[in-house]
Length: 248
Ligand code: IPE
Ligand code: IPE
Ligand code: MG
Image (cartoon, rainbow, N blue to C red; front, side, top):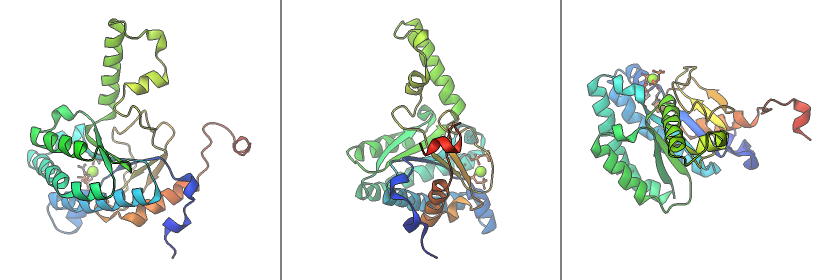
């Protein structure tokens, strides 16, 4: 069968795709290995998805790599994930540079071990002049944390009279989120057959198309991303209107 890539409408590529990369543990179990082996294999999927997103002209790709809730996992798994992050940043930065990828991060980065934070900051700086895909890693991220953080800062700026509460609207609020300046994702993908959002980008996905696949994250490859975008392009996004209004 022809690749989904060739069947895509180049004029309707989503600007921002967000991915909940789930199923590493189950993938490892299926292969009779320890969970960490699944996380390691997931790095290969990240590489594929970053490349394929760049190939079809997606501008922003947000990957949910570690949630606030994931800190509650067994200490050994958390440590392994942090180690893996350090290695992934070290190993992938040259390729990201070659592919003209820019990097940024959202989440409570102050919670990250200093070794990860240093590598991450270094890599963000290293890639900051690039003009291609903006890769956004969600690390120690939870949407409720992000929203509460925004509310706190809005309250603070109100008390300090930098803003007037009357000014608070969608646009102002969005400027206080970690994703300020980044358009909302039009497409959200979750792998591993779970039908939930797990505290990811709750505000930003208000009108996103949701795409769920049974594939476990380490099995997810370029063609899977193209298929998700193809599926997205075959949906009617009405934004509350009726079909007939959309062609006007
Ligand atoms: C996703 O895979 C990676 C992270 C949450 C860090 P999981 O580790 O959640 O894998 P499953 O869901 O247990 O299979
Ligand atoms: C969501 O996956 C977080 C990431 C993919 C980083 P989880 O595996 O942590 O989510 P739940 O526990 O199934 O909701
Ligand atoms: Mg999971």
